[in-house]
View 1 (tube, rainbow, N blue to C red):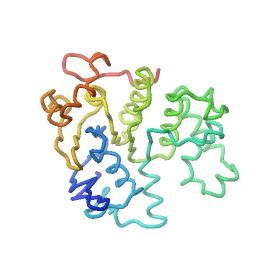
View 2: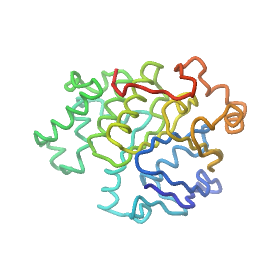
View 3: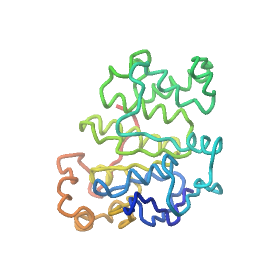
Amino acid sequence: MLRLDGVVKSFGNKRAVDGVSLDVPDGQLVGVIGRSGAGKSTLLRLINRLSDPTAGRIHCDDVEITALRGRALRHWRARCAMIFQQFNLAGRLDVLTNVMMGRLNHVGTVSALLKLWSENDRAIALSALDQFDMAAMAAQRADTLSGGQQQRVAIARALVQEPDLILADEPIASLDPRNTKIVMDALLRINKHFGITVVCNLHSLDTARAYCDRLVGMAQGRIVFDGAPENLTDVVARELYGLDAGEVMDTAGTALPADGRYRPSLAIA
């Protein structure tokens, strides 16, 4: 279980994250929602330790993440994979090499720089690409891919880390509706098929309601909603987003069943 206890992150006099306490059981798909500037991205960076908290503690099982340094911290970042809005791929490298970079913790930096990948590591990377219908593009330069294809490569790279937890920071913010569905289906499949915990920052409320087991709403660095998607009514959403609520309710988006939950086949289109 991931546990945050009174976590604070200050930038000068401003608290980007303000006393957040949160438990995330293993295997959940949690959507973090809220306005821009609510503290969502900062929260994920604190969990991954890309940023250090000003106060509070973060634990995963019996390990205090906030106390880790050196090799132990690098090991945590391998267990806790990050997926970014802007993909963070090496554009001049081919797709397979980008995915193989997720194996750094298993093969070592020197071997990676010399591209001394084992056949087993190559097989793992190709298998991950195949799951997201990207194996045929393994030899293609990453910067020739569409945004949706690049995000699938980034997800495959995260998967080959063999993580316990995936943090996805606005992974669909720059994608069109078709690629949004492909990427969210991929994250859902990782969560349900492999049992990997996923914490995902999302802008669209309809997408969050459709895919997530649980929603955590943030405003001004604090948690103001924590519950099942069906409990996030339009009234609560407007309290959370204010006048911006209409912009994040994609009424033209995915058609949902009567209970408001999306049920994909878990196959990647």
